[in-house]
Length: 178
Image 1 (spheres, rainbow, N blue to C red):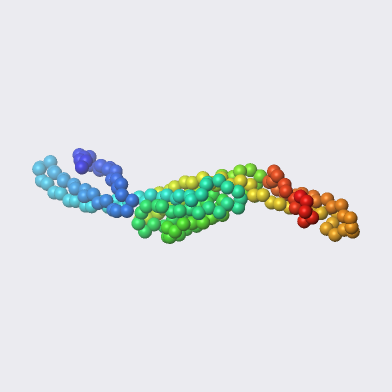
Image 2 (image 1 turned 120 degrees about the horizontal axis):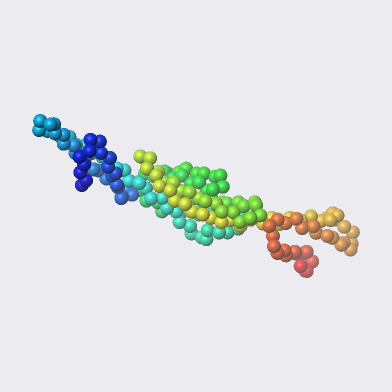
């Protein structure tokens, strides 16, 4: 291991495990100007840092409403998980079961949502994983009849289209024509 002659040294202790503690023994030997010696040792326990990870079973881009299943593949022991979905919704859980969240985009632009998974151990050690999802604007089909919906035969009816975030329209008039 490392040695030091400093009065108050600083040492960085590393634990590369995601699941097990790492114990280091720190030993101090003190010697007076007269050659008198005393020593003492203490253990330093370095708790593991978890590894937060999520996996998507589908693409990371879709139409609103976009239901996403996050598969938690984090590594660690006795973890608490904090999900922040980037749309204001948050969930805290101790379960590593898959998490399902639905993203809604009511704007007229493609929206990115940064999901952050934080895994935390019982000792407060944390790690974060970031996953960006893209959600297309939600399509809303809407129309009304002008001037009304009931007429005498023959009826010339105007359908006023008020659909939102649409590019292509298909009408079905329930008379065999479209």
